[in-house]
Image 1 (spheres, helix red, strand yellow):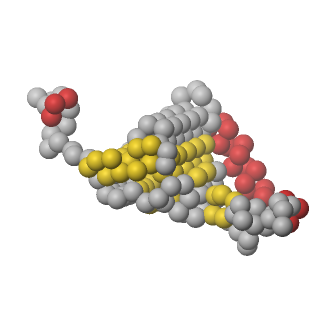
Image 2 (cartoon, rainbow, N blue to C red; image 1 turned 135 degrees about the horizontal axis):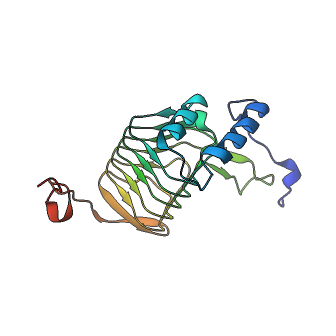
Length: 194
């Protein structure tokens, strides 16, 4: 058998909204999220909620962020989404409270079955548990869970689950050490308020 893309299949996948609704989202996303001009965070949160996303309090969404389908998106309180991050969420992406998705990071929920001659679509959800950090330009594969307070370092490609408080680096990313968090904020544990 050889690859024959005329035999492709979405394998029963449905995006969850009709075509006209998805087209409207693309227009609104261009003006509000993808726009490089600084749009207030409150407006971005409001627009995402109107399109079905569950967005917590204090969420910061920087300019030029791409969200495929907001109705498949959940972001917890105080999470940060960096410039040019791409949430390619064919299906559910859950970003927990206090999670950082740094600039240029890519969360990919869809892929193709390369053993299928039609390279049919395969989709799986992504979960980023509380306090996780996806470093700048890192990639997270479909079906992956990043454990509580785990770190995926700069430019890494995470293809498997990340255990809580692990630090994952490389391509493919592997656990390189344990994340430790000081008991006080600020440089060297000294808070700015002191």
